[in-house]
Length: 422
Image (tube, rainbow, N blue to C red; front, side):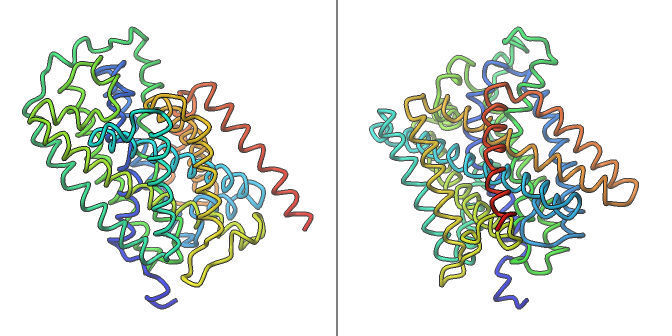
């Protein structure tokens, strides 16, 4: 395939990974982690190690099977068509749930700049939907345009985020880290709960594997972009979130819809808060753009194999899988609208846990695929660690999100059997 048919190079693929990972989580997670205080660092440590193990495993899988579809392709090639469909369906659910969560986070960042736009739940929902459909329009314009937007927004958010984390580190108040575990729960329970939340900030590490057939020199480029992007995003995210916990009291963070912007405002004045809120808005737009791209590319690969309706494989005149973009946008919009009565933080937390629960099946399948079909002592050890981490994270998701996730996955079985009959 020529370069014109493979519009994504190393930097675009890395930006897809970093941009998909650094989105709403980095800027909103301090609010959801506030009840656990400094004990949340345990969850961050476990999550970062697990994410790197998963990145190494997906890099190996991408070298072996450099096909569009990512986790779906790995599961199908290793275990067969039905497991491949279950992974594709679950992963697709996680994508449009992620789109909803990030759109909600965008509303939180805009609310920190223009409070009147999110003064009521209905206005906040409208703000979320506007960002969601803006990114859908960009993706409908073509993969090259989506890749360029991803690279631009990634640069615009990573540089300020790293600067904020490094500079604000000198203003941290150690007293805000005490008591170490304000939740009162056993540390084992805190670790499980915080891993489930912090994993949200690491989801997207596999992003470069999904549009593999549109990446130049896919076996080499996708593997390098996956590991490099995970390391960059992981370091920036953990640094920024940990610093914010040390800048504001836990009760203030728990009530904030834009905790990083509030921390900057407390340090350097309202102008700094507005600037960080603007960075968060750019970050959310970049993540929305990346997840919208992935939410169309994955079902495109499954539809080409006949396990999803052929409509997902149709492309518009710009080469974009329009049906997948539109359906994912509609489903994410329904999730936002049906839960708009919740507060921004509550809606964000619910969407995060639901998306994370649906993502863990592809992670489990990817790690198991390398253990089943892979080779090499070190890589098998990494895959075993990634599998153990995914199982551990699954235990901390919570009953509500797991039941919703399981119900949505089971709801896909009629689609599969209908396709089989056809």
